[in-house]
Length: 510
Image 1 (spheres, rainbow, N blue to C red):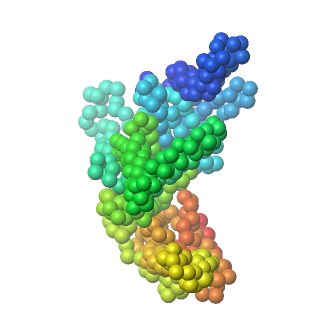
Image 2: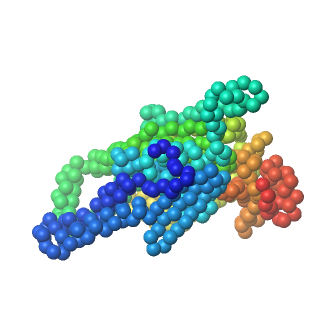
Image 3: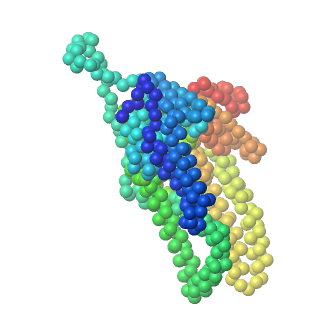
């Protein structure tokens, strides 16, 4: 079956019973361990049998109680045994369709379909889990269409010529905007994912050793190993430990990147919708209507800028967060995809207008204030230790100097990233962060402006201009009132009067 029945209610796939039972097996492991160690005692065997029975029941109930159908106007879903729930999503209100599959679902040719309406987040989404893969693929394409596709006449010879001949507009083919290339894997090690996983794994390992009561044995082993390592000297131990952590982090990052993004494709469908697919073991497919896209966000993390990488996200309504349009990839590729989606070449690379000396000064002031206390403390320790004839006394002074220089350097980078710009149809905002983030919003997606001023901003005569869209709000930090009015005037000329007369707060009906 590749199309849902529009007259009768459809069931979920009966294979969903098996998938739920298989997924519940890990919860039975404690009881199975009990059977292994205690033999066929009544208690452990009972828990195993009860667990299997409950798992089968949990898998059977959704199949017995869930019905769904797609009509020309809406998607209807009914489920529940004691508490009956009926949900309806009008097709003209559907904002996104996500199709996912884990390893078990892929083996059984099943998919999970999540239909989002943009209201209420995940709680209001309609979930069909699972349904056949071919049917899920059809729904992913069909649910976002607002009108039925044209059909050919039953008799091709009828009205072949003349004024009564049907006119069928040919659909443009899908356009592939991006595809994962093996060379992109080189950007994986420049994220902090691997290091975070390694650190978390080390913490969990220490906790398991502690809970298992192996701390004393571990301490003895650590002391023996430590005694052997000391013979190598600090010049070998410290670099070796750093290399080990770096190698493990790189391996974890590469594996995570391949698992998450292998087979990634971004295509623009015939109706203009953006469709992404990715995943090696578990697959994820997401579809977003083009008219729901309000802009894009180009994100360049600090480490990823070393090899010239960037990530691209969509700013779209009807999604819980900004969905990924492009995984870590060459910056040129991300810019090309952004230009293709916006239809405005060069929109992402429009030069930003600086927010002025006050904004730059605030970056340095806040950076220095953040490290003032530790710098003073380490500086005082360094002065007190100046009379100690030992080279270890230089450490506090070195730490204080590194903190001070690091904060000044970070302030300089953040000041360079800060700015805003407007073109004929887009407004760009640069965030004052170490990672370079450029947010580009289309004028059609802007619904209003709000300015906020803290006590210190009022003293510096600057404010934060928040550009509001249906997909979220984005702030341009530390603008002068004149610059804020200029941006508002360019984006929404009709609400500038309200923006100025209400003290910097206005909402458009767009």
